[in-house]
Amino acid sequence: MEEKKFAIVATKGTLDWAYPPFILASTASALGYETEIFFTFYGLQLLKKDMDLKVSPLGNPGMPMPMGMDKWFPTIFTALPGMEAMMTSMMKKKMASKGVASLEELRELCQEAEVKLIACQMTVDLFDMDPTSFVDGVEFAGAARFFEFAGESDICMYI
Image (tube, rainbow, N blue to C red; front, side, top):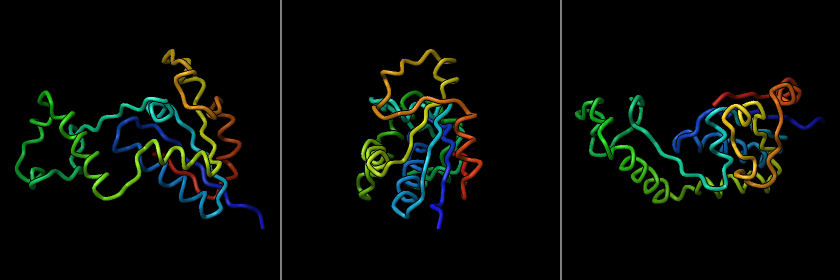
């Protein structure tokens, strides 16, 4: 029987959007899927050695807020200075309190599980990114290379 394939396109570079591609990829790999993540645009932040990701409640009405703030706290106030730092800190504490692995641990788990991490070469060039700022083991390729894999995958997700 041929191995199942799972392809993910990761486009977001915020703390809250960084977890899904790594959790799904590591899980799929553990279940026997050959797995690749194609990081493009802001998703490339997830490949940096130093991930300094933030979470922004602004424009994210589905984000549960502490103390029921999502019910009474006006959305416009999430743009106030310091809100992003506060929400990032709260999210990190919540993840740690629930025993969720850090992003660095999840990324490392993916690499150990032989998930291919592919950085979009066009986006790296577009944003003048330094390839040495990325973790070791990242493959640099274009969308055509990713489509070779994604076109044969059993599951393909855009995150």
